[in-house]
Image 1 (cartoon, rainbow, N blue to C red):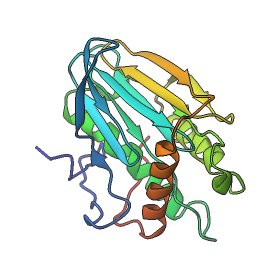
Image 2 (image 1 turned 90 degrees about the horizontal axis):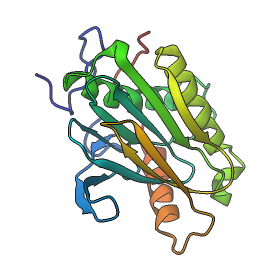
Image 3 (image 1 turned 90 degrees about the vertical axis):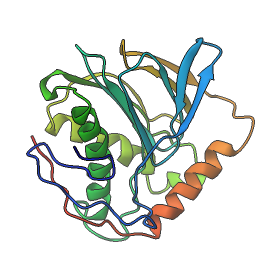
Image 4 (image 1 turned 135 degrees about the vertical axis):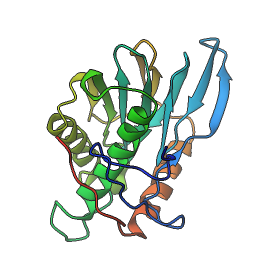
Amino acid sequence: MNSPSEPVDRSGTRYSRPAPDDGYVEGFATNLYHDRSFDSPAAKILPGEYFVTQKEMVLVTVLGSCVAACIRDTESGIGGMNHFMLPDEGGKDVASNSARYGTYAMEVLINHLLKNGARRNRLEAKVFGGGAVLESLTSSNVGARNAEFVLNFLQMEKIPVMAKDLLDSYPRKIYYFPNSGRVLVRKLHRVHNDTLFSREKEYRSRLSRSEVAGDIELFT
């Protein structure tokens, strides 16, 4: 059985994972805690992370320009969430680094779901984020590109999008209950500290320092 660090596509072909120092590495979230508001085990998903579970728990993330895909098997309740941003194009065509990285970020989550017993034909998705919340990113339409990418990817993969809250000009806090598919979205019209912005800026900086490794393809 392959570990999360050895993603495989749905034909069973393994593709290479970027080196540990690469900004493109998607990490399995390790920030687990007990959420007192919901009296539930919880996992906090930071930029560049994802999480998959078979348990009754809540997955939590805060999104600015990044997007999160919440995907689950509607029968087994196996589900997960990612949190990613497309890197800048850097003058390259749209099918190069940016699309390859976005595909990688989505495939890592889907492959981990399938490895844990989810069935491809029972997957559904809910997607969030892509807000124009950082002035430094607004001119390059990063949030809009993230939102467009995730919807196009899911359409090509034939995974139905059951709910979405994308774009606009505010951050969002997402609470996802994969066992039931329930999602709560809290719109953060006021952000009391710059933690969200500093995390996304640092994540964007990591992306800009690295190149995609390995061959990643869309499988429809």
